[in-house]
Image 1 (tube, rainbow, N blue to C red):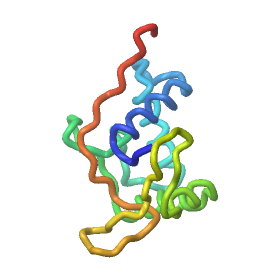
Image 2: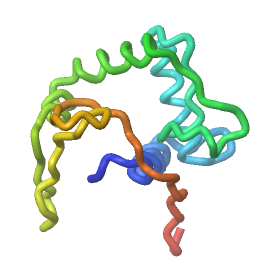
Image 3: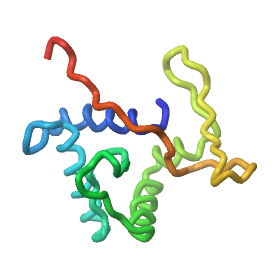
Image 4: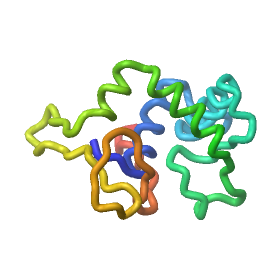
Length: 134
């Protein structure tokens, strides 16, 4: 799966459905509520997530965080062995017939590659549509 904002929105929709939807029934809102609950539990007191992807031009207010809070989140995520393995891999093969995904990213326009976590620079996501039979 590509690391982009559409993927974040799609995963949030899927997980949010398993959570039973949010206060207004939105699975994405339920997922974002869980993101904020995790942030609080990890001491990220200056972070407020408004959506699963972090784009701020889609919201009435602006999502907020600090470098310190994001470092806390990164340390928590990297403490998960499976997560650490995946983001540290140079490449990954999809279970489908899709080609190998090169996980090395050029960081900050420096012509060297690095592995691990990198900032996302993807485009505006579209909300996933409910299946026709839902």
